[in-house]
Length: 124
Image 1 (cartoon, one colour):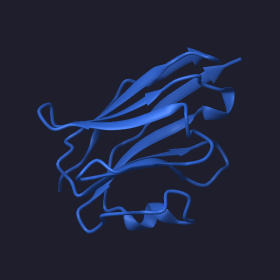
Image 2: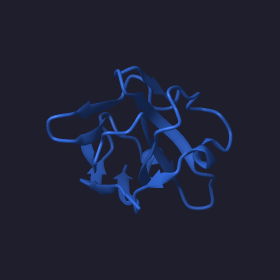
Image 3: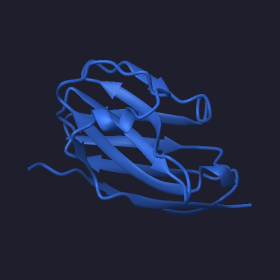
């Protein structure tokens, strides 16, 4: 079974930037989720095959999701990071989806392919 591989996490100061990568990216719909300790896994950003994107309100204007077909990779550019962005970030994909409401409860259940997760820590 295909599994996604994330890279690029780590630590940053508040106000800083990090970029996450995920491969491969040839799925109908891909998204980034995050899960902080003691909290539910939540959708952060999503992108469909033609490049239509959607963002959670908490990251809108700060995070950018994109795909590079030539490199077969998905990215999440995270800018103006805040301590509340600290979480394990997951890349997810599913060929059955073409559009999602990123803030929908239990959205994670709709995705069938996942990465192993990568830690992002933002200090104040």
